[in-house]
Image 1 (cartoon, helix red, strand yellow):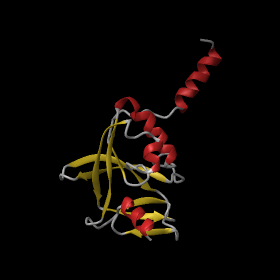
Image 2 (image 1 turned 60 degrees about the horizontal axis):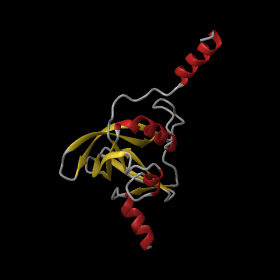
Image 3 (image 1 turned 90 degrees about the vertical axis):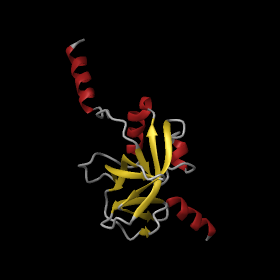
Length: 164
């Protein structure tokens, strides 16, 4: 390979996102849940090994302008967020996480401009099993446009808004 092409190749490799080596399940709690728009947009039902209802204890949900949810850790263990644990197929895991990172405005854990950052936590399935997951946590200050969703259930909030 000519030296210039070699240099270009090395620079491209250095700038490429680091592939993820572990297939940690993802806890989703908003528009990525089954039946909601981004779930279908990313073909999550097709690209997943399993999807199961779950909760994320010790977290609070907020609605940003009634458009999408954000969650933050809470000091109260009784606070809970309802969602789903999605285990992606290994063949698509890395590429799909990179696409979801784009959707969530994730630019890295140390980048203050990231809308969300990925964090690890323990989610709980309906049968009480604890599962290590990653989830997208809000990384910006709560604004005047954020309102607390006390029950922590985005699908329930959507139903309540439709019922008026």
